[in-house]
Image (cartoon, rainbow, N blue to C red):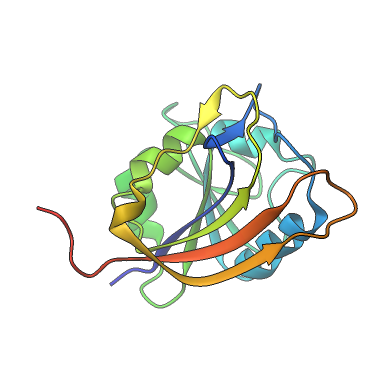
Length: 167
């Protein structure tokens, strides 16, 4: 079975972005993201690629999903559907879905794990991450209550899909 994981940072109110940008800057979250995804495949939408300050992420196989047939992105594998992206996912290595909102929503049914940075504060946003947490169980949690760079606390939480699914 393909190991498809979502990695996302959300606010308490499930906000993940505004105007195609992040809502906060958390150095520890960038490091967490880097540590988890480095050496793996990352899958993103075209807008997420364009939001990256230096283009495709280094030391990762970048796959970009676009609905514009024939369009390609330098340094990336370009696919034109969720199904085509899944075909590119490794049978043996973890593949990470890194956004944006529409891509997360479409991949949620295929993911068997997700890495969540939960910011314990509400933010104004235009993009949200909605998930039914009853379908998931926590397998790891690290709370950060003492980050001098931010006026809020946050948690790194790893979820695995429950083996008993609702029908």
